[in-house]
Length: 483
Ligand code: HEM
Image: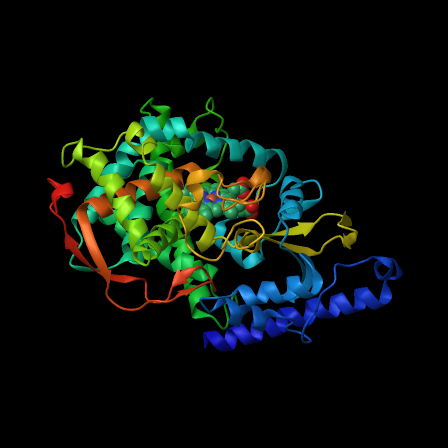
């Protein structure tokens, strides 16, 4: 049923957009005079969507971009997901687009996604409200907050999770569980319990809705996601209401929800509905991304034994100076130079967020071409991260490249896994810390081998097909160096 829905939806949305495009192109003299970036609009209705999907469903989607860059250059026009889209594979153009958020371009999500996120989500906010809420989010996840408040719980929850592992785990599942528990703790001070686990089950259904075709009539997954979204919102509303009462009585907690309830702390004045939407968006933004980066770091390390050995040595040295279950400190985190190389390289090669969509707010002239008002633009981080001009031997996993300098062979802002401009990911440091702590406990506690061969694919999201099953073996933690 879902593949039928995919097809019908593509047909439906593509039909209207392509009709509008051709009407626009043939009837508007002004537009005909515009110099569009060169490219190919592909087949009627579907454009080049099917080529893109079939490329991104493989381990090597690069030919889709490579072929078009070779033919048309780093700024080209295509037609994907129902709309003509200008695709940027150029770091300077990407920077220009991201920096001009709210002036020349604005972020744009289809209504199916907005429905699941909730209309008061940070991802959908614009203008001064966005600025204020983005900086509030930054202030909840910045380095000093992580150092002084969050790190201790990250360490404890990661450790607790790993201690409960059986001999065979699906790493992606475990990483998701960890990430969800961490986020709930950070946002609302909840420790894992039956309530958090049942919330997670509903929440998983919401997430599935993001990656399906949003036709409620055809797609049971989307229908289920909308229902689950209502249940998640109801559960969170109860929490917000209770906490509002506590906060008014002076019982304060040190978490994101408090900041949202607190009139003096940058938040305040928000309705329960606004707060719930905000919390749901934060849960969404950090969940799939951080758990995937955890899984892929392990996959890449497993396939690069020398890197795994060096990483393990770094963490064994840190652990050897501490008690078996003594938590990691900020100083420990700051003494993991090779881990940071692994984190950077995983972000660069994996491209969890391969790029972001924007919409032109006015006709925009770039590189001698015009992007017409209302057109969609795709800012591809992936194309830049995997460009040989910027990174030597760009398509292989080589954490050592980050040891000597910025990792890049060219200057400029070419490493942007967390985006840029006013919408740059506010969770960038948090994600790095969570991944580093996870790697620490994993390599000091376990050795592992893949239980099955598993393939990395990039559509509908970056993921491994089988959730990366591994067979794990406990190491002698009390003295890991003497194995
Ligand atoms: C490896 C993990 C992560 C990656 C690769 C990642 C990547 C990104 C990227 C590329 C954007 C920019 C989107 C855009 O420009 O439209 C973004 C936005 C965002 N991220 Fe992350 N992220 C990660 C983890 C997190 C975490 C842990 C949080 C939790 C605080 C988070 C919260 C957000 C939020 C709230 C936004 C929206 C910002 C806005 O629109 O102003 N992310 N992320």
